[in-house]
Image 1 (cartoon, rainbow, N blue to C red):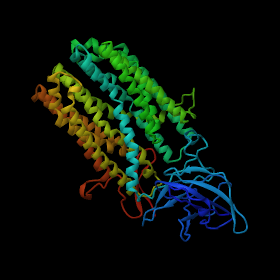
Image 2: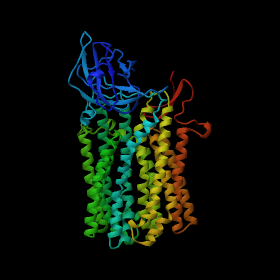
Image 3: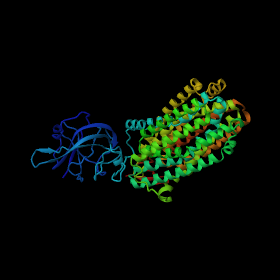
Length: 629
């Protein structure tokens, strides 16, 4: 028997009898929506991949009839969608509806069962014929009984308003998370700069230790980047929970091992490493002690970034924010106790941050476990192909990209250190402000990996929608870049005194505001394009432009070092940093959208001609032409 579905998207509760009278009598079984609330738009609706037929009832909302589908048993909750009336657009409204299954008698009457459940159509998913899922139950949603199949985009249609709102809802909590995270370091800087007896030396010690205690965490950036890509693509392709659990487990093992090796290295030979960074003699002892203490928190930092990717790839950006806020709060309290009250200086700040890292780590791992994502971990096993290899594929290109960035930031520190204690302390402040400002672009990297896969599946016939989505992310990046640059300027010009009371240091920070803000803008815009490139699996391309950019950066520094001296050299180094990111923007722009004016290369997401389209195939990222009709 066929069954018809009527969904009332009105947020107001409507008597069941009224709606039940609007159900088209197409068979002995039927379902009526008692009440519903409108959510967002998704493309295509149907049962098991088969679009529903549409029958219109006078003075009623559209009714959808399954084309001979196998319907759920009587009394089981189902999901339904209702379309927007738009020409040439296959866009529908996601609806959360309270539904009641009813069995009609042979006559005209009908009796509805009292039991009813509320459920939401997950964005991008078809109805599941086998069972309906209560999306409010996170554990059940992550269990092995959850079967997800992906809505296949037509490759052309894109609901721009919906996608923009989705990206913002995804990115804003993530941005808050990314801003709060470095506040652990900035809190240390503020307390040490204002409360330590020898503030300039203590600040310089924190500054020279930054490459060892903060930047080294990014050496494992391939793990969260790989996990985000693996899980996002796996969910888009309907990969099983067991398979995703196995790959996630392997990534966590890699993260733990790398963090232990790094911690052992920092504890055993900090003086040697700091000597390579040309650390001034007067700050060597303080910097070495700070580095050893912070090394104890490396496993927590590495595991936190991996757990962060597990949640973000499933578009959960609020839980990581809560965990990071907890860690930041602990750090502020402990900094006040250790630095301001007991006068422990840099070592007190190091202990405060280390404890805060472990608190945040346990909190976010607990969230991962509560969500059920650890349920399918193959505990006690270690297999290369199934567990370790998937994430290690990202090791080469992502690590090279991170190495280039670390080289640039380390070069800035080296030059600043060579220019004296005042410039070194100023760079500690300017570098931290820059690091926080450019975090505005990080959510867009993850947004590209989370939102692009459904448009890049090999079975999607065209790439027009992918092109539109990439352009949307870039426009969001431009807006975020200007906002970040403006905030950076305000902090440096008006708030430098928050970090230190030394007038010479404050003046040096304010001198580099213009090039630093331009570098912030270019960095954020480039990050909005990096995510699209990683989602398209163009990792070799990213590695190539990174290598070229790094070479040009080194050449520029070599030339400037020969003709410039003193603070002027430090000023122009920021312009070189900005140029590095501008080069990345130009290269990725050409890759994605082609040469200006449509001359020559048309871009990665260009549909070449009628009847064919470009598809990013398999795991290789190779762009091939496929017949679409």
